[in-house]
Length: 229
Image 1 (cartoon, rainbow, N blue to C red):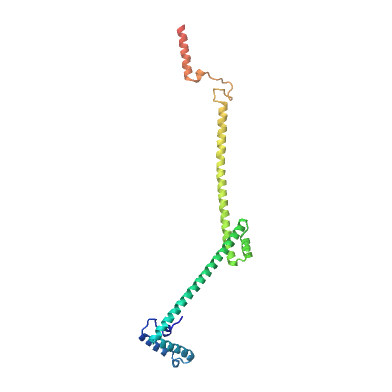
Image 2 (image 1 turned 180 degrees about the vertical axis):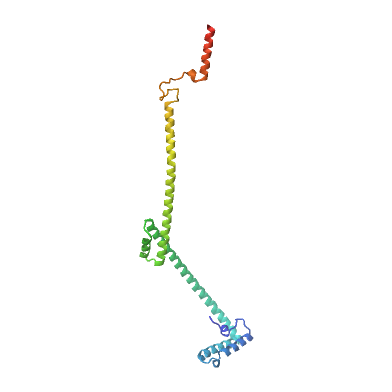
């Protein structure tokens, strides 16, 4: 919004002398006689300079102009603020709607990807929902890559579990075999007590021979018998 001060090229608090010097400089520059070939433009600009100086060089008119201009500026600023606020609200609403639409397209693509469809199918589905081609391609690529990564992770986890189970199985078998062997040994008994199936000619040893206390008992019995005779 150009002002009379802008026309003369001075600030709003310029002194009378500064306004006079600015007027003379601008008048010389835009005088029709000094602008051959552009007389019409120079004449219109020169007239604007004269009108501006006529008002700003008069203290009373300048005061009225400043008051009116200030009021106009306040009105213009209020109107400008309202326009900016309305524009900001429209932009915020547009962004919210765009984000909601984007989230809906991503959700749709994820659903089809979970059903096992590939990237091209996702792209076609998004286009069918009137999704812009570039955005549809971006969403389809991202969702397909995410789905592939997820499946790879699940496969790696399954392979790791299978490998762990394969390592645990021999240990269980070994424990079972050891338990079977121990049970068999317990059922046959220790050698020398119930006989030795591998050597049928060998008889059980006597209780005295099997234990040192039995040997001593036998010798003591013989000693007592010797005393009787």
